[in-house]
Image (cartoon, rainbow, N blue to C red; front, side, top):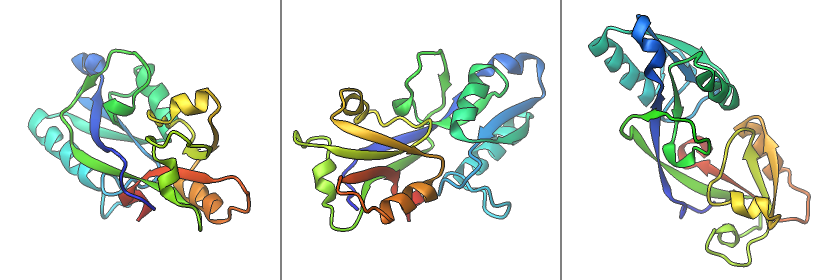
Length: 187
């Protein structure tokens, strides 16, 4: 594991068009933990819950949570079925007009590899980069997308962080494989 990836701000994506006639504020959150930002556990909900609770207290809006996978939350916000979702503006690829909050927390992304693979070979600055990027369905990896598009890297997708990490751990392939993940999620 190597920690030289860029820092990413996680911000709350707000589409306020539905709020003109509503007393509630519908927020889509991941259906799995994303430490320290969000936990599905009812006892420890994470940083985002504290921010939303303060927003609710100050605005008078009742917060309604919808727990769905990231891809589903993107569709829900695009179709105006929810008012907000957890996202980073730097990782957004669509060109729909969104409103963004100030940054809530800084996320440190790390490169994760299998045993005996040096993570430095997957540094975006390495001009000889090649291998397999293990990714999450619906996630984009802005620095690596052009390399996937021009077939310098192959990409395999998984529905959960755990499945992705198991695949990396059980790697019997001769190909060099890696993933990009928040250090907090990995830990």
